[in-house]
Length: 627
Image (cartoon, rainbow, N blue to C red; front, side, top):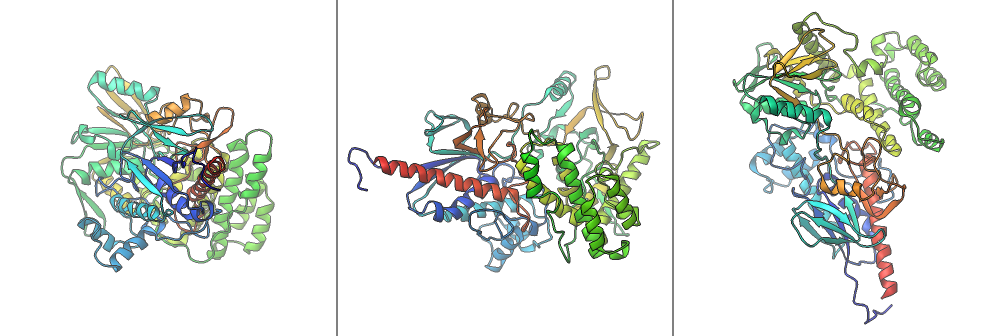
């Protein structure tokens, strides 16, 4: 069709991606992979990335972090690239894992693009190493540059080191993305929010604690990304109450010990010993469970993988979603998950450790499949087939290991917690307990199915993180050394913190040592803030919500499970607005993933990239018809 002289050529189609971290990088990789099929006419388009932090790593994985901070996944378990396990319409575009990337850099010669300290780390990295976050930042930056280079010829990428504060525009017209401090917006045919983890305004409890701290000259650090916290207010030698024993606590522990000049040595018996610098505070740490997250498993699976999904797969999810009304997590979903995890556990026990079972796997499997989830019949079957109770999967005991335990005094609790951590470290590095690894793989499978339900509440995410997303084993070994040195003191389970106006201090107690109270003038909330749209400090997200975007009861931005289009409060998907990440009800477990695990984020990225490209293609066709 010849051009109409009365209609000038249409400007290139434009996509604005707000956020330039690993989720945005993964989306760009999928746009590049799918473009030959869905944007084959070669029409130019533009990508605008808006983020005050460098593209690739974004804020959380930015390069200017302490070199003491590690990833909590082994280098061979970190990839940004699709493989045959990923359920997607687009093509597979293989790429190196973090460890493979580092190895290639070294094989190709000195990695001149890296600073000397990172080049040395890359050279020493193995598949089973835990890389620093700074090296992961370099990997993500490389993936970003490779993905941009793979975009169709004529594509222009603009990077804006700014904050986006609002999106406006008609329902089915071009959108305007307004940037902080600028008078003219970016105009876009489609907008994607890939915001990552966001800061939040404190809830009522946190506001009250902050006000109490200000009134009495205390220190209260609310939930936030630990690397951004001002830890200078925590003074040497003084007690600090810490709520949380997850990954944020591990970061805090590192920055307040090694980060202040302490060091570790091996004693004559090989035990790790901490040598304080004298600048450390004393951390009194507790949580609802009262124990740190389980250590990462330190061995690989040999032999047959657990054949999951079996009891919680696409068919079961379809059946639940077809029922009238929304499925209830505890009533409808959790029993199937528990049976799935048990199936993986016992499959591994029977096939890899048959001497610890009574009878063949085939007979057990048939009976297991016939038993209703959570039924007495199922419990009786397991009891008869698995003689040692220690070999049976008890999810309640795993979730709350201190439930019902009481200790005579604070020191007895310390000894018990050190014994718990030592046992966990030994178990997570002993292939004799390989059913644990089978359960871990089943947890990944379950997570991939659960994203279809949207917002299922926070309990599952905490349970998953506790079992599957814990710290490297060496971190727990360091925690033991800090406990023996008296730098870390455990508070116990069901830790409660209160403000005492009479004494002008914070007070902490727990169910584990009834009557024992610790007083301190500093309180740290060692966790990320909840990703709620109404309390988010992100101006853009709050404005979307005010302008009619839907949110779940837990405060997550509601998106279409098919392609991540943002939903309005009538359930209508926006034709030009998309959102990916932890602030949505389709949040996945991470922007990068373990190879071969059908990562939900990769599936979502592919579906969203294809929807974007179809949107641009349709707009291009419309423009051609009117030309």
